[in-house]
Length: 487
Image 1 (spheres, rainbow, N blue to C red):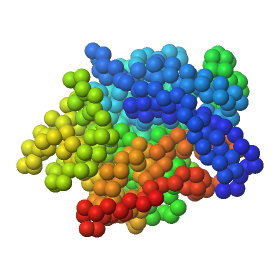
Image 2: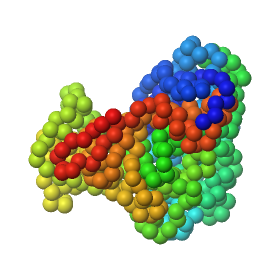
Image 3: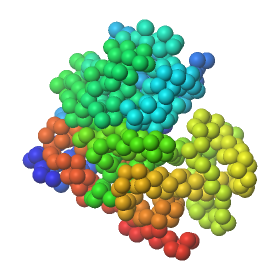
Image 4: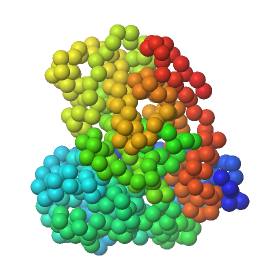
C-alpha cells in the first residue's frame, strides 16, 4: 500500500445483533490500531405486535459513544456506521413511524407467500441472487405493503442508514446493505430494480438513492455536533455498512484461493468473486450473492452461528444460574465420547427460546443420541457448527470454481479455539483465525481511504491488516484427536 502521507483517526460505529460498540481507528503509514471507546447491549423488545429493535436506546448509546470518542479525538476525520442487514425503519416526513421490527419476528411468513405467489423463488433468484431467508427485506416490505404501512411511509431506511440520517439529515441506502434487500439486481448494485418493485407493488419512492462505500453521506447536523462535541464539518462516510461487507474487507487473504467465515451471531461462509453466481445449482444450495466493497461479490451461505450457543446459555440462565461459557467450552473440548451432530441450518433454531429442547427434538427425530450434560450439549453445538461451516466451504468451492486452500475465520468466533480446530478437522483445510474485530477494522479502513489518510486497492487494505494482526493457524488433525495449533 502506498500511504497518502499522513496519519488520522476515524470513529467506527459497529452494531451487531446482540451488542454495539464505538471504536477509534488510528490509521497511517504502516499503522492500523483500534481503541475501544464504548460497548453497549443490543437487546430486542417484545410488544403485543411483535419483536422490535430498541432503536432509540441504540441511538442514545451511539451518541454517548461518539461523545466519548470526541473527548479522546476532538478532530475526527470521519465517522462510519455498519450493522446487521435486512431490517429498516419506516419514516414519514422525517418521523419514525414505529420501532423497527426484528428479523426474528414471525410476521413475515405471509410476506414470503405473497412474494412467491407473484414471483416464484427460482425467478426471483435469477434477478437478485439471494438465498432464501424468510426475513429478507423483500418479504418484510411485502408484509408492510399488505398492512398498509407503505401507503403511510415516505421513506424506508436500513438500520445504518437510519442512524446516518439522524446524524446528518441525509437519506441514502449504502450499496452493500441494499444488496441484501432482494430489491437490487445482483449484477447491477447501483440502483433498485424497477421491474421487481413494480411487480411486487412496492413504491419506488420509499427507497432512497444508493451510494457506494467511500461516498460521503453528509456532515453532522449542528445539534448533533454540539451534543457530541465535534465540528459540524465532521463527515459521515458510507462504508460497507452491512457488517459482513466490512468484515470481509479486513479478512487478511493474501491469495484468491481462500474462503472466509465471518463468525458472530451468524456464521457467513463464502468466497469473494468478481461477479455473481446465479446458477440453478447455486439456488438449490441456497447460496447468496451480496455486494462487497469495490464492486466485489460476496458469494456465501448463512449458517446459524454462535446464536446457537448464546441462546442456549440464555435458556440455562433463566433459572437464575450464571453460566461460565469459556469454562463450559473447555469442558466441551475435554469430552471424549463421540457426540451427535445436527443440522445447524434447520429453521426451527431461528426463533428465540429454549434451543437445547429444540436441539434434543431434532436429534430424537433423526434417531440420534441426545447429550446428557451441558458440556456435551456445547460440544454437540460446536461440532454441528464446524460441520455446517465445512460443508458450506466445500459447496462454495464447487459452485464458484475457487479451489479453497485456506479458511479465514474472523469475528468473535475466531476466539473459539475448539470451533476453529473442529472446522479445520471437518473441512480438511487449515483455518487461519483473526482478527477478532474484523468488522470495525473494515469500517475504519474504508473510511480512512475515503478521506485520504491511506490509499490502495482492497488487497492493499488486507495487506495492512495482515501486517498489523498476527493470526492463529489451525492445521487439520491427522489422525483425528491429535492437536496442531500454531501461531
